[in-house]
Amino acid sequence: MIPALPDTHLLPASHPLSDGRTASSPLVRAYHGVRSDRTPVWFMRQAGRSLPEYRELRVGTRMLDACLDPEMASEITLQPVRRHGVDAAIFFSDIVIPLRLAGVGVDIVPGRGPVLEHPVRTAADVAALPPLDPDTLAPITAAVQRTVAVLGSTPLIGFAGAPFTLAAYLVEGGPSKDHLAARGLMHSDPDAWDALLAWCAEVTGTFLRAQVLAGASAAQLFDSWAGGLSLLDYRDRVAPASARALDPVRGLTATPAGGVDPVTVPLVHFGVGTGELLAAMRDVGVDAVGVDWRIPLDEASRRLGGATPVQGNIDPALLSAPWPVLERHVTDVLERGRSAPAHVLNLGHGVPPETDPDVLSRIVEFVHGRA
Image (cartoon, rainbow, N blue to C red; front, top):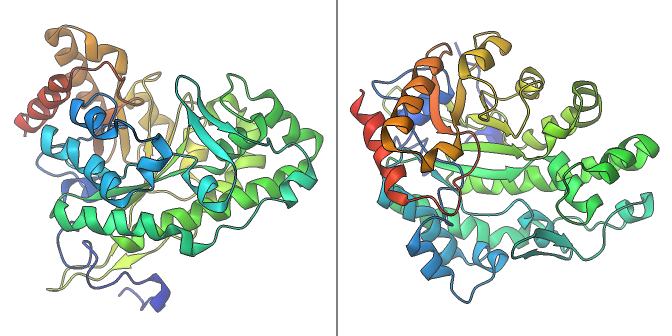
């Protein structure tokens, strides 16, 4: 018998997991380790970049402004669901949106990425970081609510950057290939580093919880830069903060009507170049682990002990290959994914901007046709 949960862990009755819209969806079931008749599929960065309708909508609007416009963010989130027929929407946002909402000076510079006005390099810099006022999340809540009202039985996945990735941007002041400044702070001033990651975990958790309470049926934590860490540094200096970032959404549960068993919001963790970290990433307390293209899914599943659902891992480079080549690759990924309890087909990273949208639609049709 499942014990009663505190009210703080119960999702509203109007939530898509509670009212039956998404609780039995192939995606939610797969994240919980249950295979459906067909493998669910969605694509990271499916909302935007490669879609002409996205580019048309974004004309004259800066990236972070688009993320904070509820009507625009919702429309961009919905575009790939309409076009490709994917099994999930991913909330259109950016890793640095929680920083912007907290009052940190940051913007997206075209051709470069996120750039900070004032990098965080000292204990005093960390202490000066402002708290995230929950009231600033109103545009996020509105965009999610607007989106799930249209999605129906298609789940929405909440999105947030992991504490290390946020901290890396804050310390480096922008994108970096090796994150030497961030990794240097980790060891030269461990107290400042721990305080910085605690701040990042707080804003990430608040950002994710707002999305889930507003209607997201799953939550994915992206650690874009964790692949630059050693396993020891990840376990000792990063993983505890990732676990804390997930605490605000951990155990959030729906009680669907009609005698259906309670359903918790599934949590997913993905990183780039993290083949050596997969088990440690799983151990921060998630239900499924995303895998990039660098290792086969059956090897990833082996490293995870064969008991963890996996997500991935089409090589984005092959999206420009002739269809027979791509079809063989997708088939191979699907077959290797059978080594895990369940599999969500995805890319091993994001959709390249130059991708032909028809290729993504063809992959979805091919995967659904294998049921």
